[in-house]
Amino acid sequence: MNKIIPALILLTCLSFWACTPKPVGGDITNTYWNLSTVKQGNKETTLNSQTSISAIFSTNRVSGISVCNRYQAGFSAEATKLAISDVTATERMCDAINMENTYLGLLSKATAYSVLENQLIVFSEGGQLIFETMSEIDIKDIQYAEGVGRLVARFQVKEGGAIPHFYPIVRVDRPGNYPFAGQLIDPSLYEYFDEETSEIWNNPGGDVMSVGKYGDFYICRVPGRYVSSDIALFRLEKGVMKRSETIAWAWCDEGWCNQQDAWLQDINKDGRTDIVQHYSLTDDKGKIREERFTVLLQNEAGDFVKSSEEFSLNMNDYKMANI
Image (cartoon, rainbow, N blue to C red):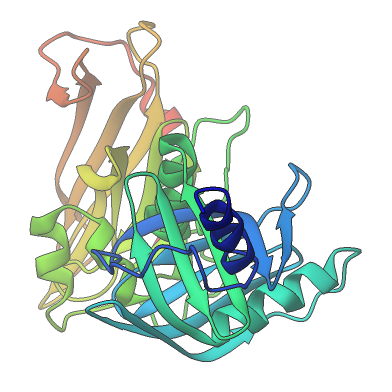
């Protein structure tokens, strides 16, 4: 009799659903997974290192790479139940397209799930999808690419031998050959700038443009006193674009105009980027009423501090632009 019982258990476990732990549900939002195993009936397929399938569950949305393509879908999870809806994917072909179709087919028919210590099991009408926890490095790469990485990608590196000269623009509607026109930054990306800056920009008042990347600094043309004319430096710190300095700006009132241009260079030869600023105030006749030079040195903390030192600067090397 004792020999018969194990045999009966073995026969029972040959069916797909028998001897499978029941779904337990769990917290699935904001989790990251790599597919390791696909089960269909009695067939079990273990993915190799060349076949990458991922699943990232955010709020009501799952997305990832399904071997050949990127995909996304809606999802809802309640207790142990899991429902996937509106699966869409790009249309790139590759040698492993059959595995991709199997994965997306099983995912779209999900019925339940279990979040375990280092594993996610998705139960489907046609089988199971077994995922392993994604590594911290991969998670950070994805968070960067989907977060501030989308913003950083808008800044083209613009470095050369000449000292970069930045100046404002007054006629934003007629930029002509203005070199800092920039590319419009979608307001949805403002959240990746520091809180004070993004709060200002989220109120009406002008567009924000990505101009380029110079050294460690990201250059933006931002709303100034009247128009999107100011040029500001930002530095990426822990996933946030923090404003370092507004270096160039202009505004006019009743014919009197204020203008400040800026140049980036290492003034004191300490290996850090400094700022030279040239300011002028002209009256309604075009006569200069005030003019000054300012040198801002970057300290070890990355902050810009007005220099008390005297530098022998040739004013002819810092001529202001005619705006």
